[in-house]
View 1 (cartoon, rainbow, N blue to C red):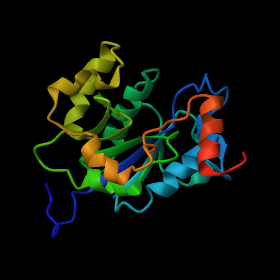
View 2: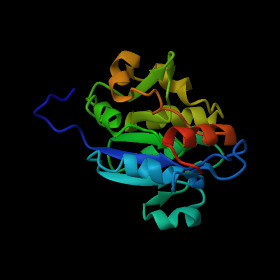
View 3: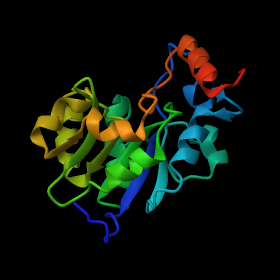
View 4: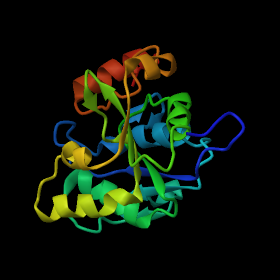
Amino acid sequence: MTDGNEASAPVSLAIIAGGKSQRMGRDKAFVDLGGKTLIEHVINRSAALGQAETILITNKPADYVHLGLPMFRDALPGKGSLGGIYTALLQARSDFVLVLACDMPFISADLLRFMTEQINDDIDIIAPRVDGYPQGLHAIYRKTCIEPIREQLTANRLKIIRFYDRMRLRYLDEPEYAPYDPDGRCFANLNTPEELVEARRLLGGTG
């Protein structure tokens, strides 16, 4: 772990903009929340973490070109979010990759920064847990995860956390992340119109 006099290890940021958005009825990334799309909230809130780069994993690059980010299609199409994480690890310049879903508009830059400060040579995955369940799309992965993930994808076992027990883990439970998330919102992802209405209420927007 780094101390107060060291800079945290270089990390790339990868935003996963996949999924079929079936419950939302439209592409979640471009849903408006307080005058910005969900993906713009994610980009803006994570812009100043000191990351080596920010990349976007999407199979629809033409839809996202206006964001001005390097974009990569899934290396193994049709493999869901785990396939997106795999692609991010293949394409990122850094050994560690902070992975975020595109539909989490309340992420905390302070929490993300705290997570990057936990990086060290003895860790493969850093993930917060909510009620004991890891937040796989709000986590840091090391390139050591590439082969275990590929094995999962080849076997079509697509649950993100299924390979975790093979890796060296650093979990963050509520006592550690609560100071950075006092409202309990930073892991909220918006899947339905009802959740969007509630998010607009919380943000104070009218939508």
